[in-house]
Length: 61
Image 1 (cartoon, rainbow, N blue to C red):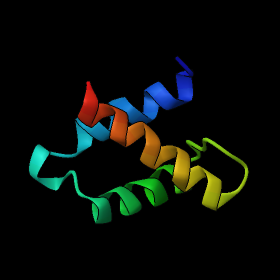
Image 2 (image 1 turned 90 degrees about the vertical axis):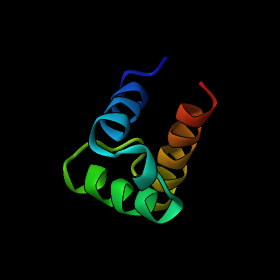
Image 3 (image 1 turned 135 degrees about the vertical axis):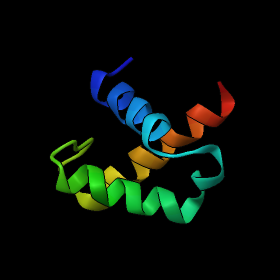
């Protein structure tokens, strides 16, 4: 697994309670990662898509 993607998933699970894990919160979280330098892509829009995909994987596992 990509280390950055794993870091995103871990941070998501550590910083958000289950009730907070919503789509809108995902957008906020994506922006937080971008601002903090945890970037999954050079483009903000691609970064957002990759963060949302990583978040979705936490719901499946």
